[in-house]
Length: 299
Image 1 (spheres, rainbow, N blue to C red):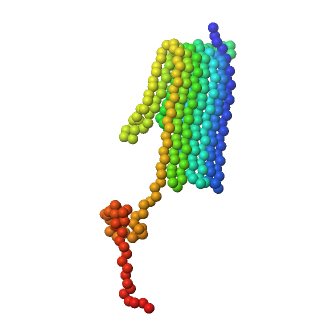
Image 2 (image 1 turned 30 degrees about the vertical axis):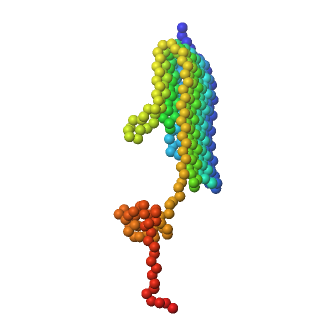
Image 3 (image 1 turned 90 degrees about the horizontal axis):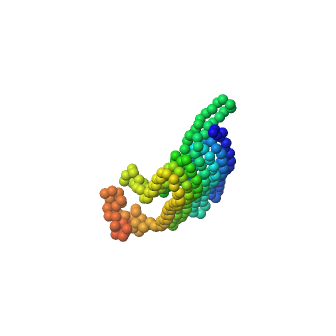
């Protein structure tokens, strides 16, 4: 039997960018939003690829990432939703306040059965058959915390799966005359439910750079491999929270009257910072000025 490829695809994509600045109040904000909905149902050959990242406005480095690749031949039904957005607010009117938020959420469901497909063009031209077993590869990554989660279904003859997940990265920084506050949190989560005949690989890796070596240090790692017919249900999540507070200390007085009232040998010293650092702060290096009478009386 020859199969004539039939496919139905409905794709809805929206993208918006916004940037507002007010230099009078020294207030700046930027927004990015991307959403996509997709429905596919048909028989034939399919090949899809999608990748998106959110970027740090300060150093233009990647923060969050999502990538998905799939291909195969046969009966294919798929529904997916995707949303990515980021917002940065900087307010320097009274104190330096910076708020940065990034988020990615996604959901994808697939029902696939493998079969070779002939492509017929007109009455005499024939191409095929194309025999490509199914493959679906999904990867999410938090670049800042070094966390990556992956799911791979390869060489499949039957696949029914549902994957949902989310990533977020939040940062609030406040800087005033007295203190500096930094509150940062990141999180990655992925939920997997699948029935597969073929190969399946599930993985998670968390690592951070090592200052003394080129190779990063692995904090946690998960790797699972399956070959055959399996039902898989798994939930993964990883979160990091960081908070710091720095207080600004006032300068200590270096002797009454200031630096220039110190004796010259303290001001010069062997390295130019005084010959006795302790004496500078306990004021024992201070030399009282000696009053001098004029050499001649003046009327």
